[in-house]
Length: 608
Image (cartoon, rainbow, N blue to C red; front, side, top):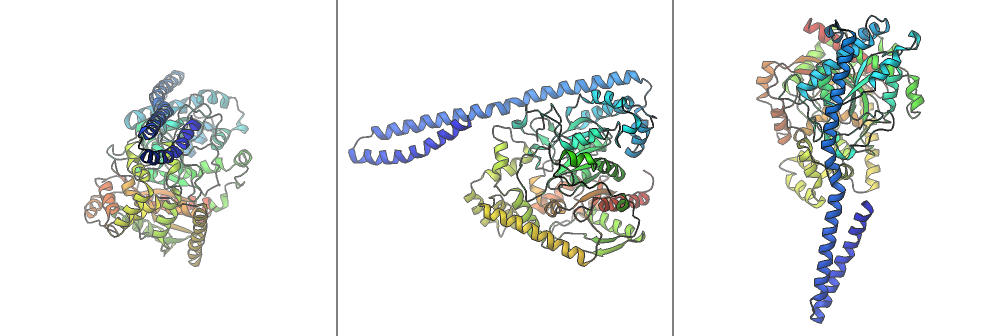
């Protein structure tokens, strides 16, 4: 049908030219018949084109009710499995399982102090409870029961680091026989032919993937909503979003419906949900983990690095997951990933660190709670014997607007809009898609008008036009490399080990996504740079933070600054995190820094 549609389009263009010729001839001869005939031909072609378009698009939209029914059935199967496992251990106390940190749970499973059935049953039951509250599940991986039986047959020496550990997966991870939707109707009813590489490695290490979790449509949103599975809520405050795009994971982990999850990150898609939901999240250096078998709405975009990474309730859980993933299996299954086993000597080193301190990036004014979290963490680190050195982000506006935004939308949004053909557009991305659909000339005209009224909105519209030519795309790739080297040179001039920056916080109210896009600068910068980065909760929003927010103006005083203030108000008690950053391929050092921050913050807060 695509060929028919293209043929119709190709035919209609010369037809219009011929119409003009016919009309001229008609005027000269005094006859109206040729012009009328061409008008009828054009009308028929238009009707045919519309019919072809409707025929092509209707199936995408029609898949949604079927997908919703499949989810209902899948969750019923999940509940049935939980009941069968419960019958095997009627006296099971799920709290004894759910309250264990991952490291202790994994050890108890290895030592057979806990049964595989009891642990899986506990998390199945809890995941269902969490889902009923916040709507975070998209699918149940029914093959987990078969995998559990296979694990029971293993000898102790054959058990992996994650033996028997239930793991949740963001919707985009390919699991054989299941859709990876990205919240898009076009991706429905196209089940994966095989497990993705990361899923295979997790299974080889004994993990039991058991559910897939919700995402925003196209993955490009701070919200977590799509027309197929609906809106996921933040379990800490149901009026707030859990963040995006790994929002289902954030919500599930925050409420102990899972103990370990896998997300992906293009502009903070792991770190934003982790911060909003009060857990830990870690984005790796690009290509340290395989991206094979991970779905995307904008495959082919290379300027900004999308990566996989773990999410959990504490840093030690992230570390155990990275140990398991960085095995020989990762390189064997995907030879494009370098074989770099986890370096224990780096993670366990206890020498004092030289820490760059950046309380503001100069583009997005930190909210009062973000600034206070940074000052608190800096003080705790200095008291623990670490050196804290002021650090300024070079050319931040250039990095965010030209490199990040211009990179993600280098094609003018064409790829993204193609994926939405025939689909219902979710409110969480509608403003963005409406802007992308504007003719380039109108985008340019509006950008000129807004240049002196709202400069950042003007730049956004300009970048939504795309780069235009392959030459300009290559220039952008070169610009990213040059900026990365500039940033590293400034880092090394101060002899830094790691960098401490704010994390976007607290959680947003619903409806603030594209309008507060600029606020992602604290996260998206490190996707441009391709640096490993993780977030750790250190405090919560206080009443004083909320009072000070009333005086928040931002650096530009524009629509983005006003939206950020509105998005985060009413957040007393919600978590606030900081971000820990290291140079490329230094995951172990970054995790060590995160662990230090976590330990100091927990000791400062006292027992939870």
